[in-house]
Image (cartoon, rainbow, N blue to C red; front, side, top):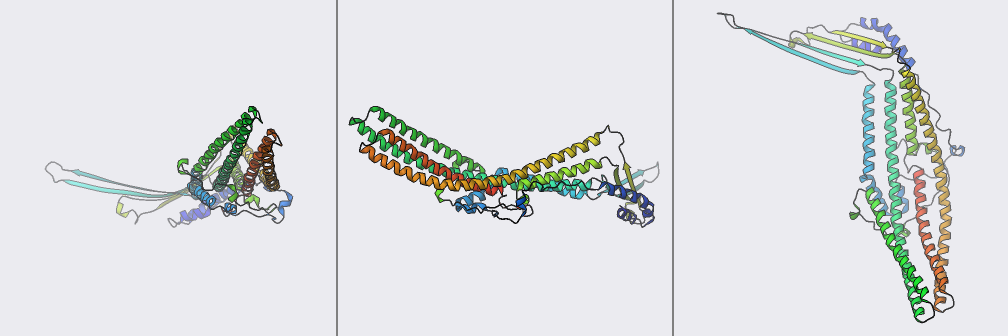
Length: 478
């Protein structure tokens, strides 16, 4: 404030203004310093598991974590999602809006300059009877430069709130991107899973039709009853229905993936036909210790808490007198050409304190409401932190479980294939009845589907782990 007083005094070279305002400026400075004591920030690492404080034992995913699956088509799809997704574009616009608000808040930290220029001119003319025409013209002007600085105590906190809002929007953009990329990868896996299921259903249909021909021949030979043939016809039709259903589900999955890249499904297709072409990345066990700055949702919750803290300070400062500072310099002349020369310059500097005494407790309630909002933000932050650590624990457990189940599923598939082969041979020889063939057939269908489902679940579990670890994003690196 004393600096501002000196600047205004220098407009007319009269340093005595500074001396006159010094006591008042000191009073305002003291009040401002009293009002600028910070609101303490709650501890943010209280819910971190103790073993996470040690050195990291796991690995962070890279920013392009999808490359670990070894699919060029998946890499291209992820690029298209980042470039064309409509929801991501909206999140980027929200970040830009927060950036503009932050810029405005930054300028609000400084006094607001206002320049007023007024100019006027008059012309009079007269012609007395019998006399010569006489005219008279005059002009005048004034130039005023003023600076106003109001709501001084709360400006830093409004800027802090704008900073937190911008950081929150940046984290929200990262969280939206990570969610969309995870959804795109999972949808891509679903398409390939459906295509694997379609191929398996086609093989199952072939097996069912082959058994139907055998059954029909044995019915015609009088070895079996027509009931056996009818039952196998039902089994064949069931496989045909299943095949049609899978094709529709594959189409729906393609439509969902097309929407993520802003394409109509008629113009969109996936070239890969099976999950077998995808790699299953290995995961190094362990819990990295930097999760609080690597998960966008955690960082966003932290920024929301910081914004709530700033709002508490703003509400608290509303209980203090409102401080405003205004300075101006003015020059005026009856001759517009001499506006900036040969004229005295008048300056003024004023400060005001405004205290609202009676408001029926409104400001106190506003402060309490802001405090409750900060407590709620803290609870939300803690909940997200606990959930984040739990997500990683669950994802690691799922990967370990699915890895063991995949080996068992492959062994069961080999056993089921051999079981059906033996059953078909012995059925042709008349050694076993038709029901044993149906049982072996159903077991094979189930084993094939189990292998495919386990493969897809394993890939999705790895995607979930990458998402739980923040997908390679960092708070400082964006």
